Amino acid sequence: MKEKTILITGGAGFIGSNLCEYFLSKKYKVICLDNFATGYRHNVKDFINNADFHLIEGDIRNLVDCQRAVQGVDYVLHQAALGSVPRSINDPITTNDVNVSGFLNMLVASRDAKVKRFVYAASSSTYGDSVGLPKVEEVIGKPLSPYAITKYVNELYADIFSRTYGLETIGLRYFNVFGRKQDPNGAYAAVIPKFVMQLMQLESPIINGDGNFSRDFTYIDNVIQMNELALTTQNPAAINTVYNTAYGDRNTLTNLVDYLKEFLAEYDPKIGDITVEYGPNRAGDIPHSLASIDKAKELLGYDPKFSMQEGLKEAVHWYWENLREE
Image (cartoon, rainbow, N blue to C red):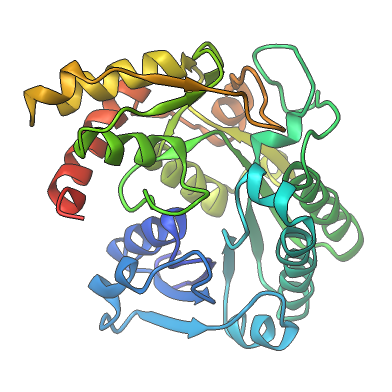
């Protein structure tokens, strides 16, 4: 595997840039395709001069860009997408163009280039209005947002390309991923970096709802492990399917803020005294999310190392060191 070339789409984004960094450290050749719509050049600056790293500025909505990026590539880690449920509700057309048409372009380009395996970012949003906990891969509900629809369509397309064209595909249903390099700014910032920045600036974080919604918050290093297992597995039963990518535990938003205040107060004691504010529930939000990770453990040997608390300590340290001056 070490002589192989990996294309990471969305490689300048939060998850993508962490994957680029990890696989370069493992001596893979890495190609990054990004249009910098939500990714950042500073996420890849540390390895831009690495001889094993190649950056292609392009857009997955353009088939020619996709075809150029997959030339000579053995494996694809497809992370490029427009995330955020609220963004998809505000602009469903662009979300669909990127997440569905762009995804299909990447599948076609990968098929035609004889890519060996296509591993892609799926989403826990696919579970929709399914109320059962924990979430099991084979039981889903109706999607609750345009974003959720696009991610489910990704799974349907991947399955068809596996069945029809023999392209090996594995989907990873990410559950609330957080960690270093996650953007704290912008209208659609994820909740953890957004709360961290507010607390570091001694501002009250605003929780949507009463704080009792719960999530299976998943640290980035667990996600990296899943991508590597999906990329390298030789188990025939493990391919052409989807996996929950999570820790397998859940915490409420109130728990989350309490932990963040506790860990950040080690750097600035004043943060421990900040009060929390509450706002309305967000449209399209799932009340509770908890993954079963039994399938990934059994078929891939997945063994997540970071609980939410352990991951938060790492993430808080990174944000304090890198972003408190912003």
